[in-house]
Length: 471
Image 1: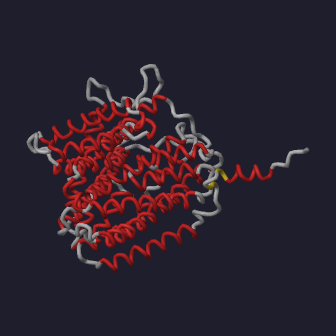
Image 2: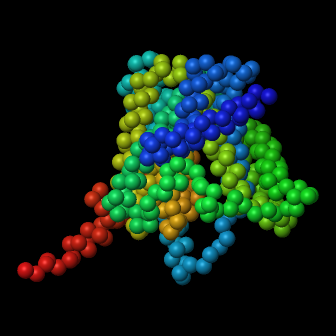
Image 3: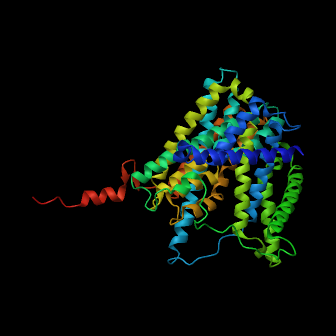
């Protein structure tokens, strides 16, 4: 019953967020999503008296909901069938897509370790204001680069290892990251449009600004029925497959827990990854049974969207202001500096990917490195609403090269488990920072600039090449 009350409250705050986005011009201008507005409102409500009004509805409930919904979102991603293959111009589009996915995934891993170094450094310098241990700075990349779901997942593991309030610290960092993603990302996207850096951008429509479509507007379908509703509804089948994968994920967690030491504890606790593997297995079985067509790609994507929206709101509502307030100075300073460095690195590297849509890639990377992949996609949609570039497809594939971050994740986990000291862990982060950058260079993932703060390099060269006017 408490879980249903919690889900109902999330929905209510989402509706309030929709109304505020519709009626407050500042929210329409900055394009802050309704679920982010809902999250902030929910966090305020939970910390000024709503917690405990309904039996069992408190921050701990929303922490649990965040973790479970996050696992379900990864299960939904794993169950989503791939897009239908399309012909391209001699394989050129496919090469661009794979090259972009590799470069962006490697950039993500590089910035992940940089955020870890900054987090520990800033908390070490400012942690005396409230007695915050420098180790908590390692929570920054899980919150910024991976989002609230993984912040809660890893923080929960760290709390079991004796680090009190790791969940609240992770959620505070994640909330700040989402705020930075849109309050900084949307103005940057609009600035790029004004400089002509997004060649496929369009004027933001009134419906997009308000956040919902009019009755007479043409929109995309939410999916296709794959079953006869008189027998079983299509949505029921999709939810049943998710339930099956969820149970299999717990089975995998039990198996991984048999691995001795912190490695077994860490992998077993990564339920989102166990869920993803379980979903891939379910889809593989369906394919072998020639029944994969029962999963509709568009409908499964909508389920992913639902779980992602609810994860964000639940994570905000799980934050305990009393804990955050005690460490407010180091948390705020860390968030500001990490945001600034993330912007700088995304821009410096994003200028050199070598394609005609590098600015779209840059904003996608920034949104992902401060929120989640859907956050990055939301910024890309501002610049490429008709999906004329391969950016969104590249962001889907970049999850594979992102796995190069695993050594960093294991080093941080070992530090929290007491298997690795803080200084050696920082040494591993520094070494990985160098290694990832060298790989970027060796694989020619970055090269000459394709755009600058003044506009497109090609446009600038064309202006320079223009003959001087006669007379």
